[in-house]
Length: 101
View 1 (tube, rainbow, N blue to C red):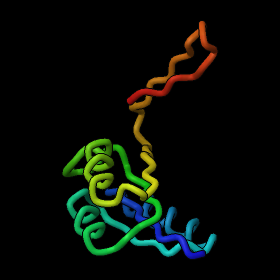
View 2 (cartoon, helix red, strand yellow; view 1 turned 45 degrees about the vertical axis):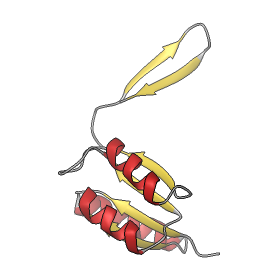
View 3 (cartoon, one colour; view 1 turned 120 degrees about the horizontal axis):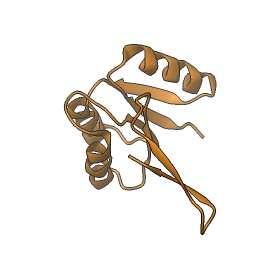
View 4 (cartoon, one colour; view 1 turned 90 degrees about the horizontal axis):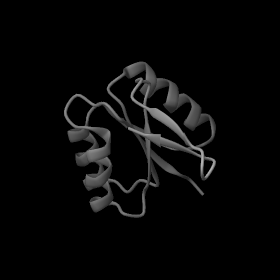
C-alpha cells in the first residue's frame, strides 16, 4: 500500500529532509511551505498523513490541523516543531508526562 504524505513547513531544509526520509520508506510525498498552500493541496489530493509545523508564516499549525481535519477527517495529522515552545510537566500523582504548547 502506498501512503500519501503531506509535509507542511516553512523551512526548506526540514521539508527536504523529511521528504528524503519518507521517500526512502516508499511514501509519496508532497510539500507545502505555508498553511494556505496546504489547504489548497488538501482540496485536490487525498493524503493519508500530514506532518505540520507548529509555527507557519500565515497560520498556527494547531489551527491548520483543525482546518485540515474538516477537509480530510481520516488523514493522520502530526504537529512537529523545532521551536522551544513545548513545556513538559510531570504529573506526580498520575506519573504521566504532559506536553503542552
